[in-house]
Image: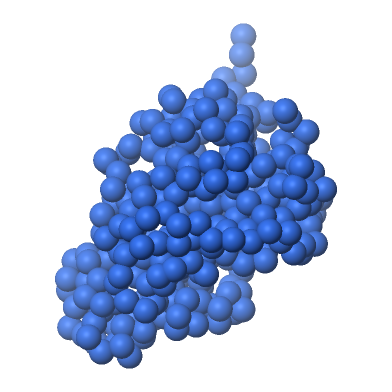
Length: 344
């Protein structure tokens, strides 16, 4: 006779709850030992860097956004003694060229599939036979898209804040779902649309496209800052004013907002549900998924659905918001990279 209680999920595959005293902390900032430019065609040149140990385990860091660019912090998830850390700024943002803040040049050749080709081109350029792929938010989508095209080039995944650009995910964050959780910042996001008479458009992503490419550069920049502020303000479990201030930089905001809007208007050039449907091609690759339970940008349901399609992956659901630098998320990410660093 059984008690009638529902059996809980296996703790080895899913970690529920919270880590209140994260045991793993970010590695110190280390400087690149190599930087360079990669010409990827279509008039685009990507800025890349390598840090850590030149003979270490290769890992490629895929930043979020798209349009987020890089920064010193992205190297801190990897042991610099054991990893060869490869980072690059995706098309149109960061230190890559041309920069979308300066105009629409090159935007037509900035799609998911251009970026997938760029990742593979960079791997070949750096003579890396196989590498670990680390990506969060948009970076998780790019990681899945890349691996489903090139599964033999990926040794492991470390993924965070899962995002697959399905309509439900886009509507949640840009068309009102998350508004109930952060109404004061939703008001900031909606203000440029209301002022331009676009408040009743029905799709805020489409309406913002008009503002982000407005003939008046002041209108475009104000819209970009409102777009990025919404994301920055909702990216942490506890409000972080320093993140919001960083997202208010005009040049950063224009690239971030314009590229995101461009990708989201086209649903990433994916068929609806494509990344989840394509998991069968990569289920043999070891994977850790780290997800903040209270992630407003990329709700936990997507990470859960990915883990259901990919039962071999390990899902770590922790008390956190969206940012990779949330203590509980960072701790789980570093635990994963530390563990994978010894895997041949």
